[in-house]
Image 1 (tube, rainbow, N blue to C red):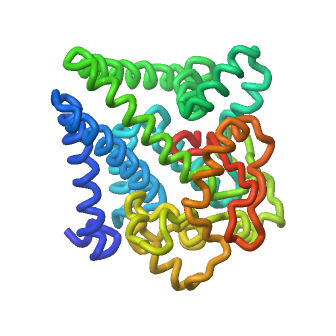
Image 2 (cartoon, helix red, strand yellow):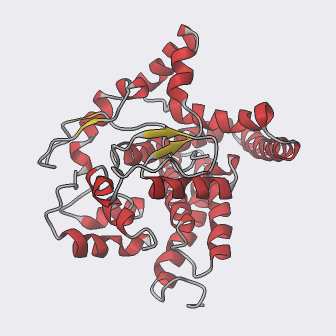
Length: 334
């Protein structure tokens, strides 16, 4: 069994997280179907957290950091993508586009939603901004909508058929849930929105990269400015807690982002030790998430159409006018 995983200790930690993700999602769904309000609340939180774990497990699979073989990583990645909805895109497409984020040192996106919104009718743009003001992650839903529509606009017959079957299957599953309990369907929608907020908060403050719109998987034009020093200076570790590092386990240590970018193949459970070995306890790129919550709220509308991500205080102790990113999730990087 140890030969299946990348490292001996991965058997226990990854095995537990995989079982927790699948079991937690199932248990949470069952709790949503219960009549008790307390069970419903617990179900929403459990499903949302299981979806978060599924996303970050998928991320590790993309980097071949869970299992010893690429094929096995890809298999788990596909399963996780079905759980969290990333299956709207092909797993290989997600994988290749995300790896470009690392090699190009850019936020590589296929759909330039900013240009689309700026050229859209006023009511469309205002509706998106109003939803974002009300804490509905409209941009993330828009990105997923683009993935659904794209094959029918410019895809091949095979891509259109794949999307039609995929949407048909997922609609049937949600219809079955609705027939069982409309309340459970509503609760699941709330859990999914919570999940999107957690991921977009993590993504918002981890980079001040340039956005590069690309329909292909070809590398971006070379730029000597984007070297290792640039990568470090424009990457931030938004730890949930510096004082209590175990809290970062809630998001599978994804906030140790500088360490991840330095050695991408290191699995999530080894990132804290890698971070300490690289930066000690005084890394200027660490910005605790507590210092970013105000920015997440304050700039929730501004960041939708902002031309850049804003600036970070030079001392690394403050979020400054860090507006943050939106629409750069690795789950929609196609």
